[in-house]
Image (cartoon, rainbow, N blue to C red; front, side):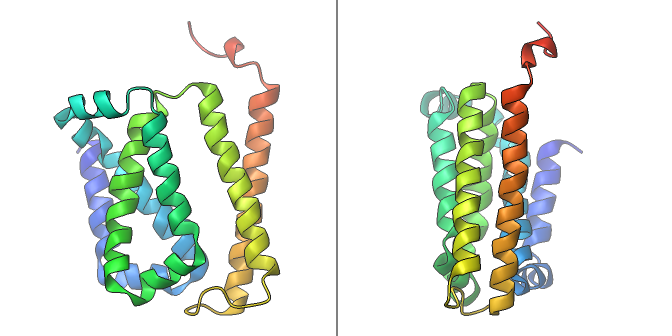
Length: 187
């Protein structure tokens, strides 16, 4: 089996109602497992579309920046508490989640990441670091329940998981800044 087949199988697995229902029942799993797994499914599916539509990707995502921006816009949209909440109550929003994350975020990320320079890759990671800090702060210090479908303790747990993610990304960016990559790359 090739990578695209694994991506399609992962996508189909995530679509199974009991799996989707379980992953959406816990806030941290919904945000930090289901949504990234949908993006990963799209990343794995990416080569299938890249080989069938090479002209499209070459024309519209030549340097990787447009695909990266589309990826970031979709991810930011799904980070908003209201949209995550609506994915549980409005069926059309949930369908959009299962379409947008793999196909509008994962596939463009797959096509863009190899085309981006190290500077742009670090900029994307820095964006996620700042987003994680801000969302962690929002979920931890908000006095109100941001998602009606989850308890306040789940909101607090999600906030701290965003902070832990931000710390890990800061460590990675520090590593990128300190290590001379040319010593380790083949020429």
